[in-house]
Image 1 (tube, rainbow, N blue to C red):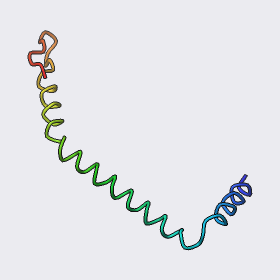
Image 2 (cartoon, rainbow, N blue to C red):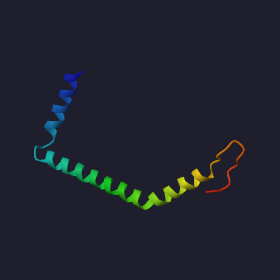
Image 3 (cartoon, one colour):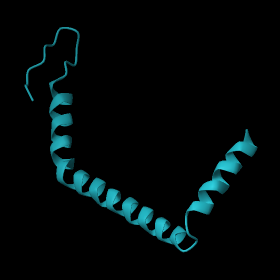
Image 4 (cartoon, rainbow, N blue to C red):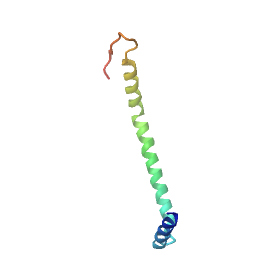
Length: 73
């Protein structure tokens, strides 16, 4: 099985010019950086709202067996 995977890898390596291998790595790096910026932006923009929602839900949970939820979020 390993021999087959190595053969396939070698066939694909022949198809791609040598100078483009580094360019692909740079493209992947830029893609990862863009995804990281999007995640940080989403956390920054939605973090307070999500925190408030979880706080409201936590405060509206009954604390005893006879208590009923009082707040709606």
